[in-house]
Figure 1 (cartoon, rainbow, N blue to C red):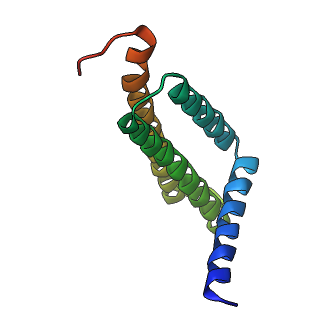
Figure 2 (figure 1 turned 90 degrees about the vertical axis):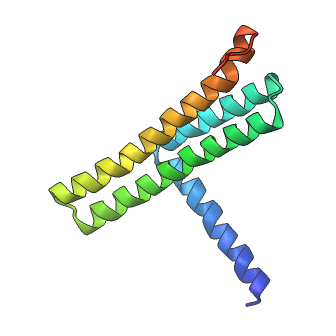
Figure 3 (figure 1 turned 180 degrees about the vertical axis):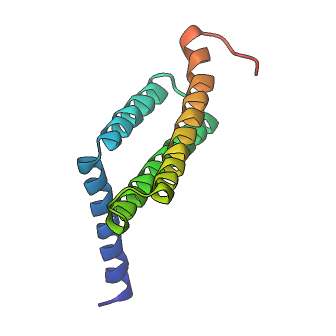
Length: 124
């Protein structure tokens, strides 16, 4: 198999993973809906290039942390199906990473969209 075909095949696996994640995880649907709403709002309010960069960075951060959290939870459930305090700690810390990403994304969204919604700049 040629190098190019191998790379294209790898992209296929990656897209299959994204689709599997969205189909199987309830939080993924929430992130998908939130992403659509934010992108639609960005288009509606004609956000600047820098605002798009900030929005895309935090959207990506939330998606990545949620996907890694899900993978970590699945691996830990497989490795240690019974309750174990260390496994609980690992899962809690991973969930905390998602929460931090979501809070930062919410703050960035508020900084960008509140002035556009109310019609004036906010001095931060």
